[in-house]
Picture 1 (cartoon, rainbow, N blue to C red):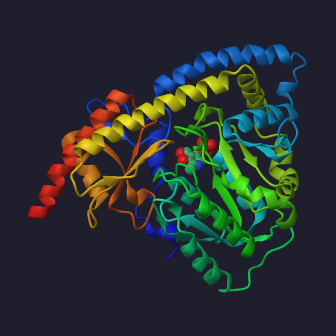
Picture 2 (picture 1 turned 180 degrees about the vertical axis):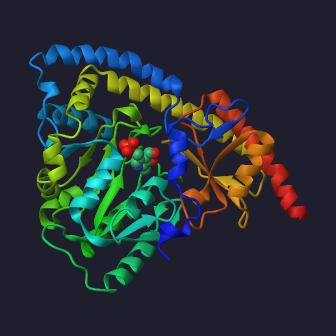
Picture 3 (picture 1 turned 30 degrees about the horizontal axis):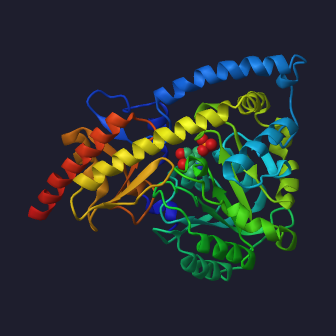
Amino acid sequence: MPFSEQIDDPPLKHLFDVSVGDGLEQEGVIRLTAGAPGPSLLHACSELFTKAWSHTMEKFQDVNVFQYGIAPGSWEFREVLSKFLSESYHDKVNRSDLILTCGATHGLQIILNTLLTPGGMIFVESATYMIALDVFKEFPNSSVEPIEMDDNGLDVGDLEKKLQMWRNVKSWNTSEEKPFWAMLYCIPAFQNPTGTNLSRKRCSQLIELARKFEVLVLCDDVYNLLAHDNPPKRLFAYDRPQVQSFGGHVISNGTFSKILAPGVRVGWLEAPPRFVERLKKSGILRSSGSVNHFMSAVITSIIELGLQKQHLELLKNTFKDRIISMMEVLSTNLPPNCKFHKSEGGYYVWLELPCGIDASDFCDFSLKNFGATAHPGKYFSANRTNCMRLAVAYHEKAELTKAAELICKALHVYLADQKNQ
Ligand SMILES: Cc1ncc(COP(=O)(O)O)c(C=O)c1O
């Protein structure tokens, strides 16, 4: 059975709940569900956008900003973005490798449309971003195959086994236009939902596999810059030194949703030259005349004025403080047979309840009896049904720690009840 069908609750519903804020502000209830910044962090954006807006208008008195732009995004936006990313990643990012998108979800869809053969295989981490699974359902006739994971991220041994198996299943219909029979979709840094990082050794092994099996690797690098210390080297950088001999197999999919504001709908793809050339010919990108020309001009101002760097610092410090405080509560209060993955960046802490416990049932119990809950593992994975994802982006520290305490209390009661049944 395809992986997406093994998940018994349609994930889409839950993100829409989050987008409209349903339940997040409900009196007496704290839901650690939202993968989006809360009101206080968004308020900080208002001032920043007002300043940037005046700057953009002064610069673009010739009204170019209201016109169509060029397919990959304006030269100026990509130049400024490449400098910002090079500085933030501590690694060179080339302007010519960048393509403007309307966010990481849009980036994913463009890549599916342009590079993967229809009906192609899609490999994913065994627990993954739930909405990506919905995107894959819309890609004609594709099959989704989960790859095992552990505390160091994706298990490359399992990946190799499954690549071998699937490649020989039939003859795949690739073409010059759509050269890939398979794509690996992964989140190597501060993974959603588990918070894990793919180890350096595995990054190198994964690149070898991508070359050997001619597989495209799309990395959602959306949380990398929210590292508590230095951001981990992105997978794209492992592939780059040999792009000339192998053509390049990795695309890094970035977004301002997690480092500025989700409502701006601006992101970028960082891709090897052969894919950039293909993407520049994409009908959607050409017809859109740069998909988000106007907003990318405002973001150019935000970066030029140093406001993006400043806001990123605010987000990093805020999330770090929240995650550390929440992990302290968990360390002290969790029942001994529960554990959590130590998070070093991003939005999430992944909680593991004892084997056989249905985290979904527990989340309902905790909400009803203790007024605090989170997303159960079944939203992200067919087999991690004993896990839960606690998200720190939305709520203030005091609410988060209170919710973590309540969840721990609820766990003590729930697990004792289970034992007595
Ligand atoms: C791994 C991952 N990719 C993509 C997105 C969505 O990004 P965007 O808002 O840029 O479409 C999210 C948001 O939660 C995410 O966690």
